[in-house]
Length: 134
Picture 1 (cartoon, one colour):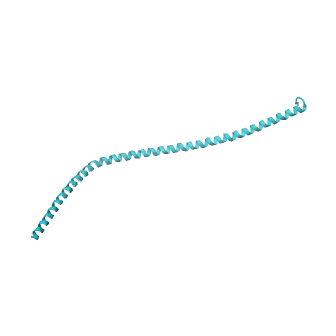
Picture 2 (cartoon, one colour; picture 1 turned 90 degrees about the horizontal axis):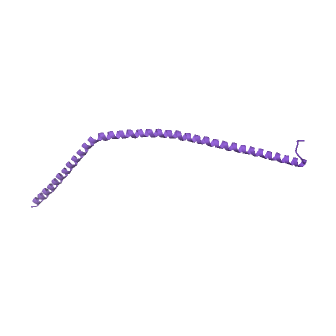
Picture 3 (cartoon, helix red, strand yellow; picture 1 turned 45 degrees about the vertical axis):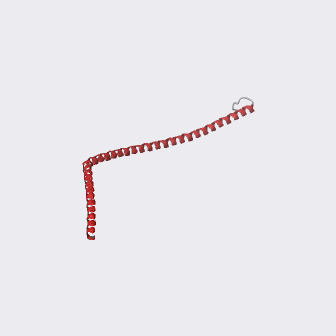
C-alpha cells in the first residue's frame, strides 16, 4: 500500500513537472517567435536608419564647420574692434594732453598780456600821460 501511494505521489509530481515544462516551453516558443519578429523588423529597418543617421551626422558636421568659420570671422572682427578701441583711446589721450598743453600756454599768454597791460597802465599812470616809449 505504501508503495502504491508513493507511486501515485511520484506520478502526480511527474505530471505537475510535465505540465509546468509544457507551459514553460509554450512561453519560450512565444518569446522566440516575438524575438524573431523583432529581429526581422530590425533587419528590415536598420539599413534605412543607418543611412538616415549618416546623413544627419554629415549635416551636423557641415553645420559645425560653418559655425567654426563664423567664429573665426567673429574673432577677427572682435580683434579689429579691440584695436580700433585702443587707437581711439590713444587719440583721446593725445587730444586731452595737447588740449591741456594748449590751455596752459594760453593761460600763460593771457597772464603775460595781463601783466603787460598792468605794467603799461602803471607806467602811464605814473608818468601822467600817454606812453610814448621814452
